[in-house]
Image 1 (cartoon, rainbow, N blue to C red):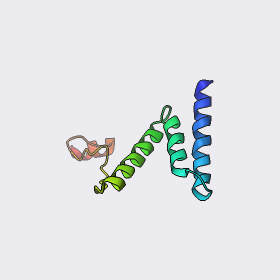
Image 2 (tube, helix red, strand yellow):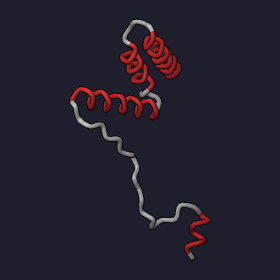
Image 3 (spheres, rainbow, N blue to C red):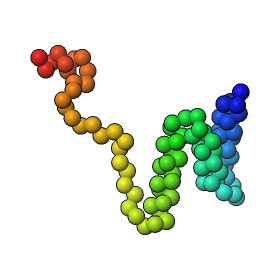
Image 4 (cartoon, one colour):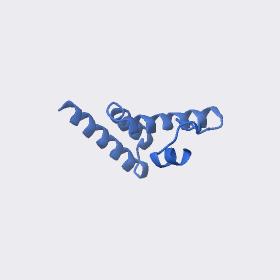
Length: 89
């Protein structure tokens, strides 16, 4: 039950923040608050909130915003599919 309340609150805050982007009010802060609530339940909300924090910091500190992939495994030592494994033989 409490999980549904958190999800509902997060969705409501996020939607209210989206509306406040075009209406007078703190839209971005409300979206961030909604994502913070949703981040307690969902990884995608945590990633989006982290991205927003990174953009905020890079904007106000005049540092270049670098986007780095979270997983950069470019090693070809392991085959990626059974078909590739057969073709290596």
